[in-house]
Image (cartoon, rainbow, N blue to C red; front, side, top):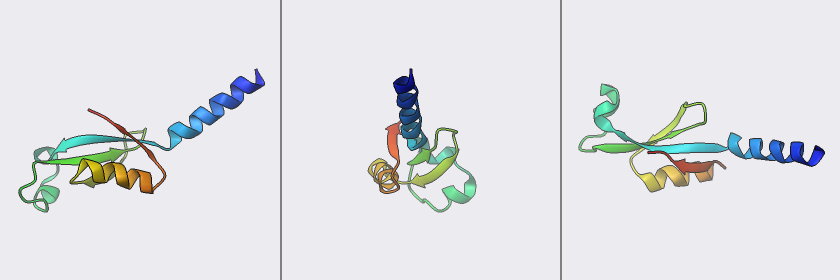
Length: 78
């Protein structure tokens, strides 16, 4: 049993560093953000496991790169 407990701890540690990347329509964002991204229709939000938004960027690849640069494991979310 001791080895199973250790495995669970390691799994939890990995999920603590997991973030989710999801597409967001600019039209669904607050007007102050919309006014800053003229001509852009879709952006990508990076969220932690609790749903807190950590970043909002204009490119999917950038969202994944940003997450990895900060030692997170990005996962796509549709």
